[in-house]
Every structure is written in structure tokens, then in C-alpha cells.
Figure 1: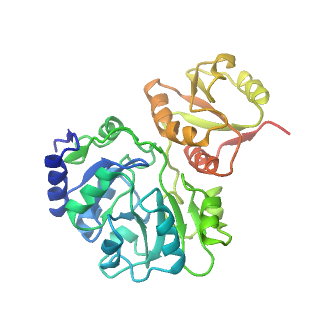
Figure 2: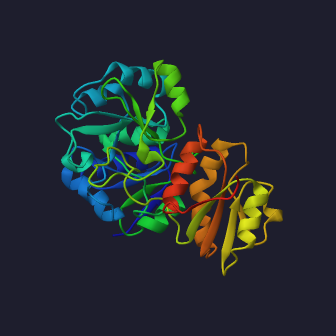
Amino acid sequence: MKTQVLKPDDENIRLAGELLKKGELVAAGTETVYGLFADAYNGKAVKKIFEAKGRPQDNPLLAHIDSIEMMMDGLVSDFPEDAKKIADAFWPGPISMILPKGEKVSDETSAGLDTVGVRMPSNEIARRIIHEAGVPLAGPSANLSGKPSPTTAQDTFVDLNGRVPLIIDNGRCPYGVESTVISVLGDKPVLLRPGFITKEEIEEVLQKEVHVSEAILGQLKEGEKAASPGMKYKHYAPKANLTLVCGEFEDYIRYVENHPGENTYCMCFDGEEDNCPMPAITYGKKEDGAEQAHQLFYVLRELDRKGAQTVYVRCEKIDGIYLAVYNRLIRASAFRIIHVSD
């Protein structure tokens, strides 16, 4: 299969819609990461996503919509009051909600669950592609399963060349990590995956506590089903072995000095690289969680391009948007975490 990478003009957006209507795959950028899309109602089309990515089929996908009306036409069977409040506050935007599944959703999209994750992207090109397709689009990140999510068309092409017919290049993704995912079933909203929209922002809108799934900072229990993408498997990992080194900078430096090795890199905050005892790459300012999120996956892929074998990642905060960064890093490192400060 030849993979075309095309600019997001009217003609190419129409082409994307035509391919999706025919049961084909299309990759395109959103405000979070590049997504790999198929008709969420067409099980055969959605199976192609799993095949292209090498993704486990018990891992559910999110359905992307361009309007509330599209969602209510068979995608969901109910729209709870908490969900309406979140939609009013944050849609279109980088937050997905777990809702009761409607009659049109393929089992492949929902991984056989009776729920479906739904989001309305704020990226205009993504919404235009959904509109042209005329149906909700199932869409995980457009990477090979387990690798860092792509935030550029070039990184998408590296992973999916020959696996998809079309990639729409609508630039680098501004947020850089996948959407927040929250379950609004029942009386207790539960955060399943942290993202750019934080737990605290959702609590302010709902005027109630948002519970945090244990799977955000840990692993699912044996036999427990994943209700959301990003919960079950090792994710986001470059070829290098990552270790998170948590603590003050002086303690971080002391640790990496004692653990040298071939093609070993420090992954630290802006301005710290000159004090590292080995090659270093930065992923944003220490006090800027949004910039860290924006840079994270791009930097993990840059480490692959540099041939890194071992990477020591500096991290400190794990609240607010920093929780989204930490959540991706612990999975990218397969939960290798060292605490070096008292």
C-alpha cells in the first residue's frame, strides 16, 4: 500500500471523508496527538486500526464526533447530567467521556464493553474530516502499538508508511499528550487517564469530587478490563530503556553520575542540560507542565533518532497537568522509578 501525506485543503479533506466512508483508514492531527481513524460503526474498518497498529483488541478506542447531534444518533444511549456539564465547559477540546454505548457502535470500537469513550476535538481540520465522513470516527493515536504517540505527520509516516492510504498533515499538535478521559457513569466521576484538562478543572465544573483510578499511577489488577485507552499495557515507549529519577536536581545528577553507560542520555528540564555528566535532551521548563506535555512524545522520538540506549528522566511534580506527563512516563519506563531524595 502506498501512503500519501497531503496538506489539509478542501480537496484532500473530501478525499479523507471518501476513504473513511469506504471503510479505509485515515491518519490526521488533532490538538492532542495524531489519530488513526475509521468509521466507529463499521467493525471491519475498525479491525484495520488494530492490524495497522499491532494493537491488542481488548483495548477500547475513543469515538470522535463533530457535534452533540452526531453523538445522540446511535453513538450513546444516555447523556448524563455530569456529561452535559463537562461538554458545555470543555467541548470541543481535549477531554473524552465514558458513556453508555449506543446501538450503532461496533464491538471492535468498544472492545465488547457496554460503554464507549467519546470526544469532540477542538482541531478544526479533524472536525471537518469527521463531518465529511458523516459518522463518529474511532481513533487511537497513530503510532505502532507501544511506541510514543506521534505529534507530527512525519513521525506518523515513520510508523504507518505502507499501512494506511492517507495521512493529512495539519502541523505539529499543540498539546502533545492524549485527551483526558473521565467516566461519568453513576454518581462518582472517575478520572481514568489524565490529560491537558485537569482533575481540578473538572471538579470546579461539576462541583463535586473526581475520583482517580488506581490505574493512573499503577497497573490494572489481574483480569480487570480497561475502560479507557492508556490503562492496560506498556505505552509510549522509545527504543531506549527509560528510568524515572524523581527528586531534587543535585540528587538526580549524583544518581546518573553513578550509572554511566554507552549511549546514555539525561532527559531533564530546560537550563539543566549543561550540568549533566552525559549527553542531555530537555523537555520543557521545570515549572511549565503544559510545555512538558507538548514536548514529551516529540523528545521521546528524538531519543530514538539519536540512538539512545538508556535514558534517565528527571521528574518532580505529579499534580495538575504534571500528572498527565508522569502517567505517560511511568508507562514509557515500564514502571522503572527511582526516588533519590528524602
